[in-house]
Length: 334
Image 1: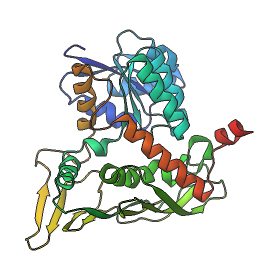
Image 2 (image 1 turned 90 degrees about the vertical axis):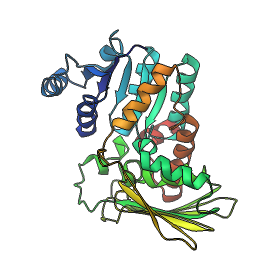
Image 3 (image 1 turned 45 degrees about the vertical axis):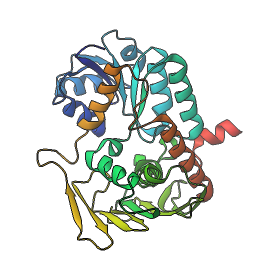
Image 4 (image 1 turned 60 degrees about the vertical axis):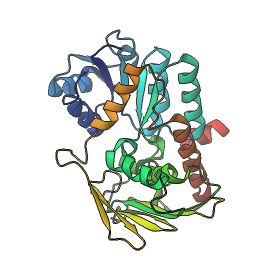
């Protein structure tokens, strides 16, 4: 991989635009192509962001010899197809979270990447955030003793109309895959895959989860109380409590600009993001992909594929407990 890493972007929604815009500020990054379901949509996106090539088919982008890595920003239901096309064409892939619609699809993608010796990473930007990395380091080093509980929530008030993608089962709608993936990933960053999964949800008439409570348990005795919602604006905070202290993250825990470490018998310690850093930046995620590619790695140590698979298994278990199944899954089982 040369000094310049050339990106192709699949999809033209808000997160795709944000990622493409932020790549401009990443040293050695260049967005050379975008693809959408229609050439008109791709061309409008390309013209707005100064991208030289626009394709009306994903297959054309992944066949472009000037593309080194493909960023997949489609809705969840299309992650398997889009990322799979890129891997089959020999391209490295950064795929938005949740990695796929379900664990089975995720296993297929990971197997394909490993079989081809190609780089694949879930776009879990939280795992690349410098403060989240520092928090995880403190927990690993025993700063709060043995972890006993994790609490985290992510909820939006909406309301979202029945035809909104968050209410559409066909594209993997609901609170869980869009929002709940953050609390679940946060808990599993610190404790690994849970041994037990319990959940309760309010479902929409369309059959997606609108408001979901989750209780995860580990054989160590640790537990995580998590929630996600598209009908209630929750605090979006998180805390990790151990046998000797606690770490609290304020609103926006998944892109924190600070957190507080409270240890027994000591004054609270506040950890703050570098003053020049943007707490909502996707740059650390992009920089991690490029670092791995230049080093010849096929997996990121910050966002390991086994960890993404474990999160997908937990999300599947939660959906199983609350009775959410997407149309593609029902068709597969029929």
